[in-house]
Every structure is written in C-alpha cells, then in structure tokens.
Length: 220
Image (cartoon, rainbow, N blue to C red; front, top):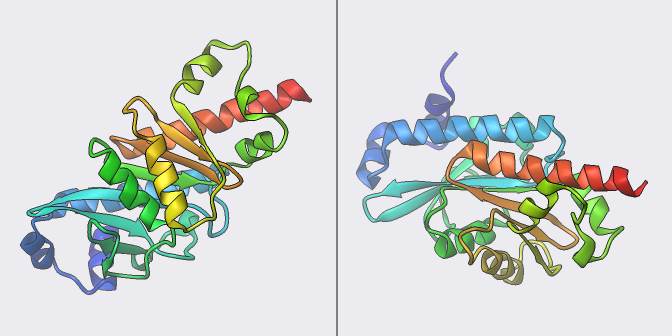
C-alpha cells in the first residue's frame, strides 16, 4: 500500500518536483500530512470531531513565505483520505486538491496574527458547547481546581459569529493576539486551538474538553 504522501500527490496531481519548485520540503510535507491524518483521527476517536464538522490546517514554509495544507470542505475528518486535503496559498486560495473548508479564512487570519504557530485545529467539543449553554461566561471553567485556573488564563471567549464569515475569522484571530493564548472558544460554535506541533494543538483541545466535562459533573 502506498504511503499517504504518495497517494496525496496522485490525488492532487502534483509531483515532488512541483513541491520543490515552490520551495516546499517534501519530507516536511509528508510529515505534515501524516500529522493531519493522525490528529483528525484521534480527534474523532475522542469525540471532539464528529461527522463532517471541524477543520485543520498546517503551515508549510515556501521560498516566498508559506503555504497551507487544509482539510477540504464537507469531508469526514475521522476517515481522512489523501484527496480530502488541499494545498492552499497563504491567503487560503486552493492551489491543488479539493475545495478548502468554508472556515479557511479563520485559519489564514490566525497565521497572520500568530506567525509562531504552525498548526490550527478547530473542533466542536460537545461538553464545552453544552457547558456554554449552562453557565455564564464569567463562570465558564471556573472551579476550585488548580488546572482550571491555569487553563482559563490561556483561553479567550469570543462572541458568537456566523460560521464561515469574515467576522468570525477576525474575531477568532483577535483572540490569539496574546502569544500565551492557546485556544479561543467561539460562542455557539466550537473551539479553535493553535500549536507548534500537531500533538500540542490536539492536546489543548482535549484539555479544555476534559475540564468542561469535569464542570458539568460538578454542576450535576
């Protein structure tokens, strides 16, 4: 069976030479694709990505700046196939592959605001969403626990904006203005986390979902 990277090149009609011409390191691209497949699968298995919701992007260095690997629109991230991942430019315009996620503009805005991050993961964690419907913002994840206080400081609560809009993209990116912020909770929508590695981005999402589950138990 061909490796995911080789099958992705076929699916998007590219060669290693095409990537090299753009200044993209082929080994870095292959590693990023493996990261994306593994993280999306793990996020699905732990229940923070279901059906077709959520999206993920990874920044790749190029000779002129950077490009993005982005999950395509309406694809099942838990069962990601090579043809489900698009190569886009820094503005989120698809270069090869499927149509990009409708929320790619949000990823683009975050990378511009936070050039230090290489991974952006957007999930729809059920416990976090349920908790947001039960408690006021000032009480969100507020519990007599050391972890709760520590992680609240790294989370920004953003106002509800219509999914896929420029308003949502800008609101979420603004939430990441402080480099110490790990995630932004988008009202009525979900969580967006950033990381220097794929594992970090996923781990941040898991941490907040665990705290939300704990608070829901605490309230019951």
